[in-house]
Amino acid sequence: MRVDALAATNFRNLAPFRIEPHPRFNIFEGPNGQGKTNLLESIYLLSAFRSFRDVTNRQLIQWGEQDTRVFAEVTRHAVKRDIEIAISSKGKKVKLDGTAITRLPAAFVHFNVVLFTPDHLQLTKAGPEPRRRLLDRAIYATWPSYIDELRAYQAALRNRNALLRNHSTDRTVAAPFERLLVDTAVAVIRRRLDYIDALTPHVERAFHDITNGEHTVKLSYRGSPTDTDDAVRTALETRLEATRATDERRGFTSFGPQTHDLTVTLDGRSARTYASQGQHRALVLALKIAELHHLRAVHNLEPVLLLDDVSSELDEARNAQLMHHLTTAAGQVFLTTTDRRWIQLGNDRHVYAVSEGSVSL
Ligand SMILES: Nc1ncnc2c1ncn2[C@@H]1O[C@H](COP(=O)(O)OP(=O)(O)OP(=O)(O)O)[C@@H](O)[C@H]1O
Ligand SMILES: [Mg+2]
Image (tube, rainbow, N blue to C red; front, top):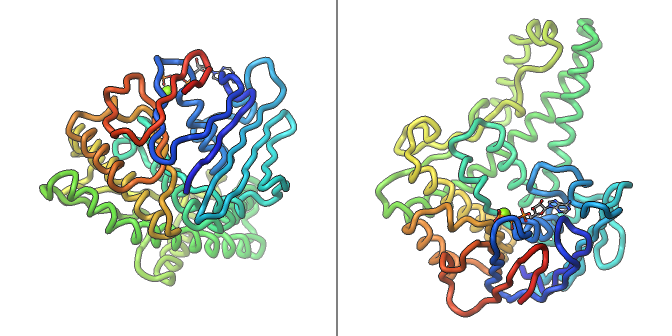
């Protein structure tokens, strides 16, 4: 997977630009607040059609302007494609090879990226929400139809909640809604379990390398049985039955995939509770490297890697591991830094200066 050209107009604070990135390493260097993260965001946008930051479409448009456009020429398995996204007050429009796309999930397969930002370093420490979001995004980057499954569940959940809010306790009305809720929940949970299973050997290997085999990591899914779909279904039905009265009183569904968690244990103990700072960093690094390897295995390609200012957040040893990993295992990489001395990647690279929104080689 490779970006051959990237261009944008009116995107965030960036002056209109067009670059032809190096096939290996692209370093964007500049002081704080110049537009480095914005540049990575523009690339990510062409893959996920939304930002990795929690923002509205509107906030991506340069202040005072009406619309923004980001464009890339990418090569995937020797097939070249143009991807374009245009955002205005009317919403966003995506074009693939010049043709408008109406169903976005179908377009996810054309551009595979893995993102690593300092925010991810909170992952193993934080509450379940960001982990669930990361898990869901990683799954739909792998299996795009997961989006539809997740949306079907979310719709079922909204419908049941609406019913609960109307205090409709008539069982004949509620039963079909609950059945749909359970069916769609089983599909979501199944995907998550499959993903965790597939990711696990990659995480174990990466973590083993990072800690020289001194520690072991385990991923598990919390909130549901993990063996068969029948067991998942029975547990959901039982729990739904047990919480129905409470749910009716509160007016929302208190239990389901939206409350589940991906838990990480270190040497058999909860990482969230017991891991040290350095161990958290090692865990997140292992999770990210695993995501890369997994995507590589599934799609038989090297995803584009976006690293936002990660080096300054890692200690020297972890940073050296990351650089070693990048030079030996990653394909095309885009990374930002305030100081290129952090980045030891040899000469296969372009170094761009980012200054007040201008990007120059
Ligand atoms: N819609 C927008 N229009 C114009 N400017 C914007 C818009 N959104 C954000 N900015 C500005 O873009 C600037 C650069 O942001 P960015 O996050 O890319 O900086 P950075 O180079 O990554 O800095 P740091 O090293 O601190 O992470 C910020 O100063 C911000 O105010
Ligand atoms: Mg930044």
